[in-house]
Length: 256
Length: 63
Image 1 (tube, chains in turn blue, yellow):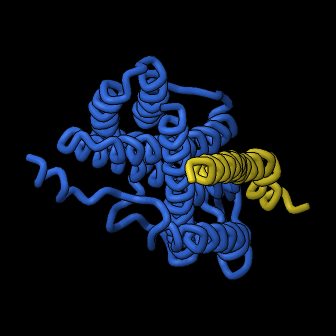
Image 2 (spheres, each protein chain N blue to C red):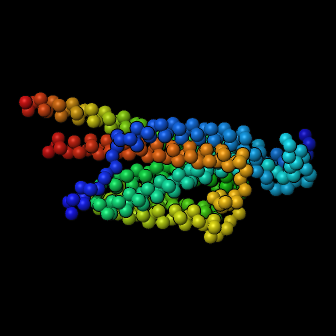
């Protein structure tokens, strides 16, 4: 039994990944900035409702309203995907904790969930502004919005649950199970636009998405930028959490 | 201005504050989180330095 426990490789701060984290954060920030610039320079405005007439704009005949509000999409979708990916790590480390009972995996899961919450806030904020402009309301019970709200509430509940339990092992076990349950909502949220088609949230990730290269390139740049930012933030927070754990351990020893 | 062009661009200016707001808030949330992490890291590193000093003193006293 002890041999099995020894064989478990624990994630640690200060290694190769932590050395790469500041560069990932910097590269992510640069990519996000580049994507932001391209979004407002090369990416064309999408077409809205038809107007009474036609005009030549650039080298194109335009007979529809041009929608600037769609530009929110270039950051909104990448931050949403980043939040979902972070929750996948919550579930992964939750499973690892339940298998090994190693507190380190609980630290990893907590850090991943915290990163997810940051990106969920970004998604909600940008989505709300889009909703407010396009529909004139702050909220509507649309399937994607509803499932994502549930996801946000589950993530908040995850931290409430953690704070409510004092015993570290029990807290870690409950949080691991709750983290896995939270992750169940991720594929539901992702697939809901396919299961219940809605005009509000189009299916973005499909082979015939209709995005021109002028739109796809800034979108992908923003996407990889946000993934790198999420990774950098996770590693930075994990480093801090590990250091805090070591401080607590030394304090305990000194008190003894 | 040409009425057709006015209609084509009719929502652009109205949408601008929402678009700017969305991007600004995303950047703000991320910057605030980085700031919180960096502040926490600095504080924890200071605590670690104090503890290391204490341990060194305790080690010296034992000798």
